[in-house]
Amino acid sequence: MKLELRGITKRFGSLVANDHIDVVVEPGEIHALLGENGAGKSTLMNVLYGLYQADEGEILLDGVPQHFRGPGDAMAAGIGMVHQHFMLIPVFTVAENVMLGHEQSKAFGVLDIAAAREHVREVASRFGFEVDPDAIVGDLPVGVQQRVEIIKALSRDAKVLVFDEPTAVLTPQETDELMEIMKQLRDEGTAIVFITHKLREVRAIADKITVIRLGRVVGEADPKSSNTELASMMVGRAVELTVHKDPPRIGEGGLRVKDLRVIAPDGVVVVDDISFEVRPGEVLAVAGVQGNGQTELAEAIMGLGARSTGSISLDGVELIGRNVHQVLDAGVGFVPEDRNEDGLVGAFSVAENLILDRSDDPAFTRFGTIMRGVLDTFAKERIAEFDIRTQGPGQAAGSLSGGNQQKVVIARELNRDLKLLLASQPTRGVDVGSIEFIHKRIVETRDSGIPVIVVSTELDEVTALADRIAVMYRGRIVGIVPGDTPRDVLGLMMAGENPTEAPA
Image (cartoon, rainbow, N blue to C red; front, side):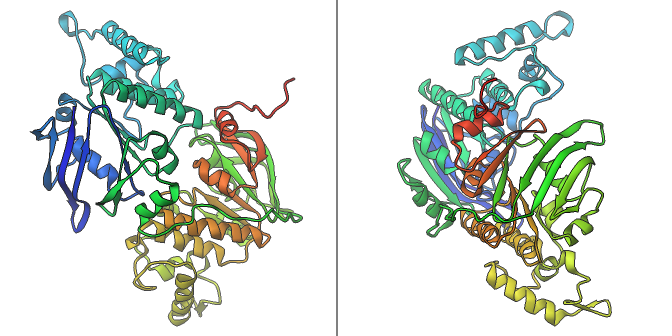
């Protein structure tokens, strides 16, 4: 089935998320939509899937205009979507999830679970999936859950299949398996739309590439294009993708974590007896699929959240038992994984956000009142130093782009007397150009003799920045390996194996 999007425009108030976008996807083709977070890719696909109604433009399938009032209409027309965040009911079985919304019944309205099981087996067998129809979805690994999403779409006889950032929660090995599945679907004639911002994956699998920037199509690219060429199209300027760093110069002291155990409010152990050190002058990256205890580890270091036991010491000073303000005062700079929730106050100005944790600092206050002239001068210096694109210190931080919001957070945390930098998902949701800048500042911090912890689910970021890598799986550290460890080895570790260990 041929898919055509003609002149699709979608507005949210004054924001034009999609601006007259044209895309054609042929049967038996993997067509990648490449663009940074916020470029408008997912909005476009939500229009296609009937979740949003376009303000202008039309959708055609095999030349016939379509009018989708909701996802049900899109599915009935042969469009399936594998969402970035799985649309599955964790307590249901695989068969129950697949039949949900398209239930078959026997006499007296009794659901025909047996028919659903058989259908799951049939589709799974066709693609070589190992999926138990009676397995509870919440008990399955994320890679298998994604296969359930694919089975759901195919069970509706989808001829056009949309994958929306499908590798966000997968190990490298699971990503490779997904790409083989996509190639098999393509070879059977399915038209596939692959939405991503990961250059490596686009080059590996796409037949055609459409690049979207700020809601507009800026051109088509050859899959043989280099990462640098694709990145330049995405951001509109030349971008340096390689992180340049000298060998680490290791100092004494730093952070020492010993026998750390974190227990969530519901009694679940989310960080399970881990120990490691981060020394001055090195970057330790904490890698793993999201949800394996990395967030809780960062929160424990910062004195946030759940109950912690064990020891976390910084230059010999114990941090467990201290609150967030005391941890910050001990010299920890913290870039939280969700800047909007924990890193910024959107209604406050850029200047005010730059001193959120220093509002009582005598450098900025007199008799309990902030000295606005001093603050503005300080803010203008940081805006220039960190290349924050803003109308001025008084602009509300919430009105900045994602990359510039992150630069505000980075600028605030690096302009204190640091003994440790803890950066969680430091480049999540920012453009390639901002990633380049943030990575440089992290390396500069390391080179100044400050220990750095980077928590990231982006394996390219981990391998670019790390001197050593600690891989977490189900709350434990599987192993700590050098920063140049091959991706396939890291992928196995992210799935709970450690091939670097000598056999017993």
